[in-house]
Image (tube, rainbow over all chains, first blue to last red; front, side, top):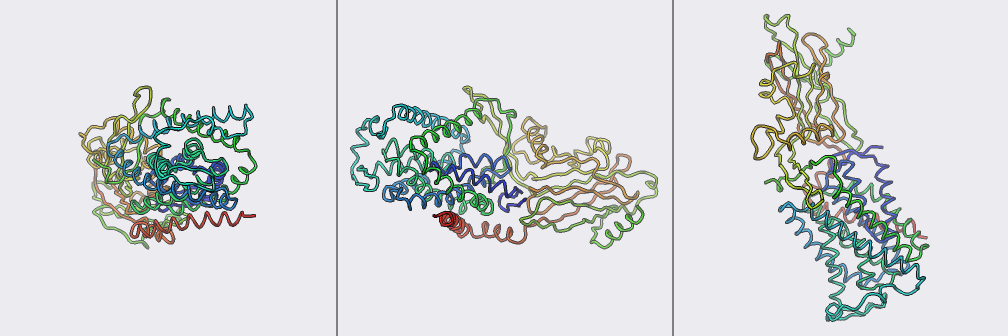
Length: 309
Length: 250
């Protein structure tokens, strides 16, 4: 069944969008990631303009992460206090990232920065997670891998205004949490993604959050930060296609529930291993895009008048 | 065949016609509407040749019809290998290039008119690419050629040398299909009449492609009240998320 998208100005198959939403929503609910890094390339293949694809995916991420976050909240697997502080840092980071994004677009180095940024970030995070989790599984260790392995960093631990986050049992500086939120918001806005797959490892390895609260708290952060990003896209350029986002949402909210249900049955270390493999797979995709001959050295996109010289 | 011809003529006469010196045009659907179910639409442009000078009575005519869609700005990026990676090295910009462009004719345009005439009338897609290019001379370079080939491969530009059929010596029909990615806006059809390679008549006709129904309401809201549109988007997203959670809650 074909459907015309008034903002994207193209026709797509409704069932393809819903199916895509289910797959991405499942991954979102399972791992606490938004799924934008998987969804956006598919929409570009469909002929949806890049700006509309990124903005509409932001709306879809809000829906799927709301659905997933509520499920985790109901199971008391969210730390609302820590999540709220993260969101505060994330929104400021996101605003900074959007401004930096515009600047890089004008300078003309955006795609190089995105390609290298994705590859470095995903490659290193994926490798660390894979090594860490594999070692953990092989040893059959039941303790948190991070608490034992990571040494305390002087200046980070010395930050003032220490707060107790009772739900996750952490005691740390509020600035440390704000900094993590800020960095994720900044990177997310710069790379045009929600940043969930960076946030989950950051919560685990930097904040040393217990596995139980990782996914739910990450989804809470995603919901709020992507809602702000989505609003900014719609308000600044009107580039969100509600119809496109709605079709994706139908599939993804259902998928998020499926993912959450599966996630409940899988041990935390296996989930981390799977996430590490997905992150590495996406990194490999970017590596292929960067290092292999693209077939056609030229590409064309429609651009707004403000980007003309 | 004869009854079909009479029917087409009757249809032609019943539609509004645009007067020109030697060609009159009418379209099958003067206002194409795009709604959620839009998946492209076939369009027929009818042309009637009148006031034929006696000197051309026995000469068969050739017709080229070009159809331009709404204009958009474009960038073309060229990648190059740097430090082992394929990164964008340089780019070219195009201002107000037609988003879609169709060249319909009864024969290959190269057989109908010479190079200079074709260039002067901007019959070829490349003529419009060169016109839109920012900061370049008149000769196409690798960016222009790449853009030309990319838009042709995507079906945004199309050359249809058999799309014009003569129903009688002085009555023709040009058929093409508006693609499913058509942009709403004003479309311009230019018809050129040739006899023995010489341009003997020309005219143009504009028609609208517009959004309708729910699509139109969404488009207006997004353009005119972006703050409300943004808020609505977030509310819908959160509501959908909650609905998904509530529906699957056990």
